[in-house]
Image (cartoon, rainbow, N blue to C red; front, side, top):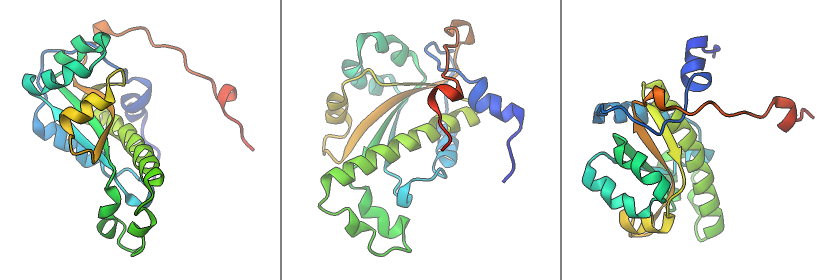
Length: 196
C-alpha cells in the first residue's frame, strides 16, 4: 500500500464539505452503482456487510420519506437529486456461510442473540456508512449525511417486514458551493487522543 496523493486527500477529507443546497443536475444509476462498487470493499467484522441502501430518486419516493423528516430537513432533502436511506439488516448473519465461508460456525455465533445481532449490525452499518460517504466523494458526488428523522416511521414505510432498520440518511448530488456554511472547528489531536 502507498499513501494517496494530496489531491485525493482533498477530495476525500480536507476539501470535501457537507452540502445542504443542490445544483439542478441529476445523478444516474450508473453513478450510484459506481459508488456502491467502491464502498463494498471496506472491511466489516466477519465480512458481515449488514448495510442495506435505498436510493430514492423519484419525487414520489422522496414524498414517501417526507413525513418522517424533521421540518428543518425537508426542503434540502426534497431538492436533493438522490436521497440514500442507509439501514442495517438484522438477519445479516444468515449470509455468513457465503460471506465468511472459512468459518463454518460463524452463523451460529449470532443465532438467538438479539442484542449481539443488533449491536453488530448497527456498528458495522455505521462503518459502512462512512465508506459510503467517502465512495460518493471518490466518484465525484457531494453528500449531505444526516439524522433528524423518525426512524420508526421510515422503517414502517420502507422496510415494513421489520428485518431492516434505518440508520441514517445521506443526500447525494452536486452541491452548490456558494451556499456552504463556513467550515466549523475540529478538535486537535492532543484534545481527544492519547498514545499509550
